[in-house]
Image (cartoon, rainbow, N blue to C red):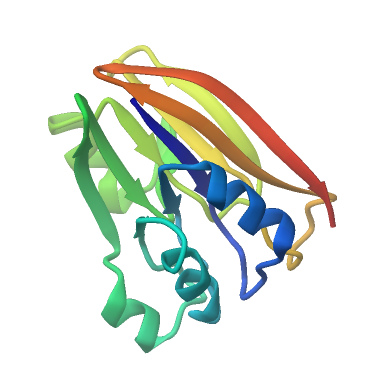
Length: 163
C-alpha cells in the first residue's frame, strides 16, 4: 500500500501546509509548473518525488525532470505529463500514444482546475490535482491524496487551502 500526495502548478510556492501533507505521504508526485526548484528540493528532503516539468519551468527543471513520466506503482501503470488534457480532449502530443497504450492512471496539470474522471473508452482514471501554488486564477489551492493498493486506486481525498 502506497500513500500518494499529488500536486501540480506550485509556481515556486511551497509552505508548511503543503509540507505537512508531504510528511504524511509515502511518495509525492508533481505534475509540472514547479517554478523554482526549491519546491522540489524541499519535498525530496522529506519523501521520494516523481515529477515532470511544465511549460513555465526553466532549463534547470527540464534537465532534472522529464516531460512525461511513465512508471509502475505497485500494480498500477501511471503516466504523468503537464499538458495532457482529459478524456475525450487529450492533448495532441499524447493523443495517439494514450489510445495505443493507455495507462491505468493518467495525470496532468496545467489547467489549475481540479478534475478526476473516468475514461470509459480507454479504461483509465484521469486526475488533475488543480494548483497548489498561489499564481493563477484559482480561488482555492488544491492537491489530491490517494492510496495505491496493489492494482486498486482508493481513498481519494481533495485537500484545499486558501489562496
